[in-house]
Image (cartoon, rainbow, N blue to C red; front, side, top):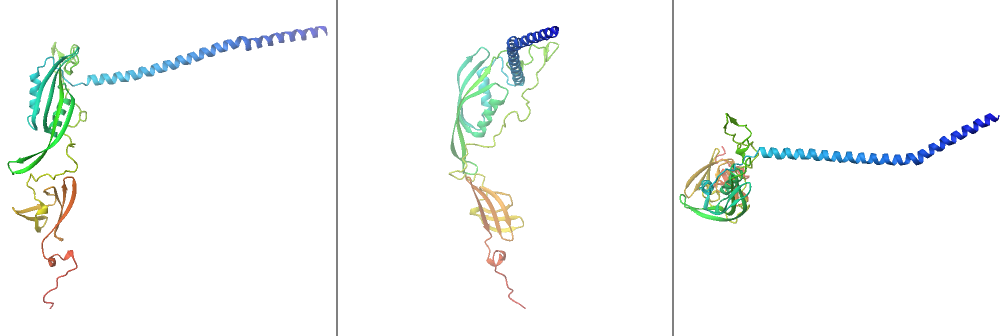
Length: 333
């Protein structure tokens, strides 16, 4: 039995040593190792997150670079190597032959920058809004590299006499002033014509070939050349525009007959025949009713819409549809 107790005691001692060693390793030695491994894991996750952020920034940078490069390759402005101020003035004179009075151009300065040079002009004048809009559109969107700064506009009504009809004609004129900058002498590659220079592309046998006309842009890229709205025309006029076209003033005329789809009016100058949709002073004919003996017109009186009715000037017995009156035969038999 002594051996049995000795074996049990030896096994208990081994178990205690193993358990104590396991507890010491688990709670003392491995705790430090676990903390070190946790810190290493956190550091790895932080590095991975940083790497993911850098990859996102790289992707965003590539997208931005692609957009910038597309814009750069699609440029169509031309910056000539040399330019004289007379060329700019000749261009402006060509664009302002009609619709401007006056149009004054004053040369102010010539500026030289490291990558380009430019002429500076001060321009003042007066013109029709549509003509001014077309001029500004041409300067901003044609291939010449011109730029407008400090544009100021004001308007007033100009009433003139038409020599053909001897009638007053009202026009809305716009007074304007702006600074025009004309660029030239740009660095190599800055102008659209220099896009293929020095690359060997666009050359045949060492002789440069003409570049494609980059001004032929897809529809919708440039703004519309003709404005649909003149902001200087008031919505409601304090004065009704004059009858410069000599149209029928329907409120001053007498309706004397309706024949089919034609209404005949009598004026002091004679007779005028109009059909549905024909224009009259300030509007147009919207209805011709021969049964009712009625003509309707819609008029725009300086921004106020008015609908009027003109009736035939006949006896009541010939317009039975307008009332309860009925004709009775003189001889009932």
